[in-house]
Length: 279
Image 1: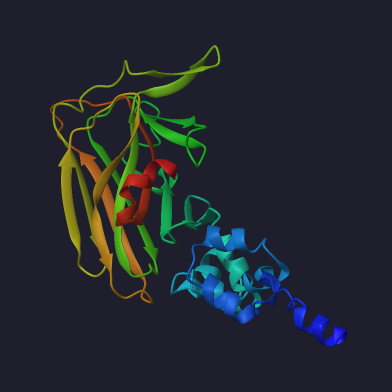
Image 2: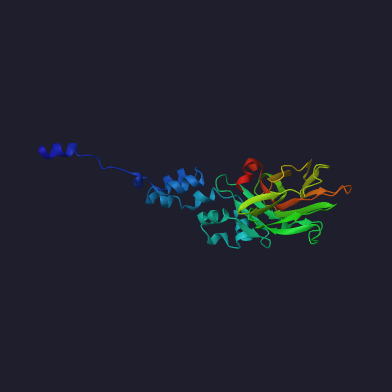
């Protein structure tokens, strides 16, 4: 009787996170954001293994990630785990001679691009009477083009890529004034800024499938970097290469303009407009 009583009072075996089947954990993780997946992977060995499952990370990759891996990483996607592909795409990956970058935004999962001024066609860029090439710690490309003075201001660029489906925005990153350091402090000289309040700058974009956008505005906020919106375009066929052309011009030759720093052009999902300062 004593033995029976002891057996009846015995506690059932305890269960923990390690007892949850790995495939069940992976199914849950697939519906979480990447930072959440990485945090939960530290809970137990089961969660760690589940967080490495290919199907978990493939759900976080753009639909045409194979194109990205081949063009940008120069690798065979079949030789890499989906987790490794995701991690490498989240880094700033250079292509086209190092003057363009593409990366996967970690939290929201959209594809973003940056095009250095060196990859743009700029009127008079090699004439030092008009433009100077300056080192810049605040640029992701570590340099910028500084316009001293010119009559005909014209900047053109293009990008050809297999974009994931969605709507994208194009921005020119510009500052009126030249930044330098004095006694360890960053200052901005705006003495050469002129001509941008007389006539607006015109921004245009066009795509190989016939889309067009046009806008214009006066340049403002001397001493601050501003992302000027050139327009939006839509991608409906993610597995098709699309060429996007973009430009900014101020070609009224009745006056000169100058004192402008040109850093780069950003292309990102349209819903990221308010997050540009983080890029």
